[in-house]
Length: 86
Image (tube, rainbow, N blue to C red):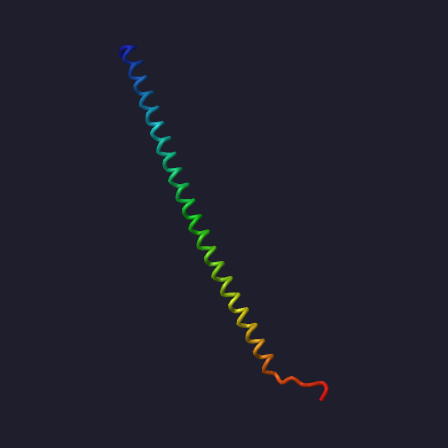
């Protein structure tokens, strides 16, 4: 094969390899950005759901605590009070 033709084919092959390398780098970066967006979205969603759960659970606990206090208060008011002076 002629040396010039061989060199031209090598240059063409090197250019093609570089193009494929750039395309792969671009695709890789595109996928990385998409994955990062998904992670941020799910972290935000999970954080929101955990916050709602904690708030709901906290409110539920507060209601149970207040109900218990009211029950105790009403129970204590129904007990006969003995007068120590009598």
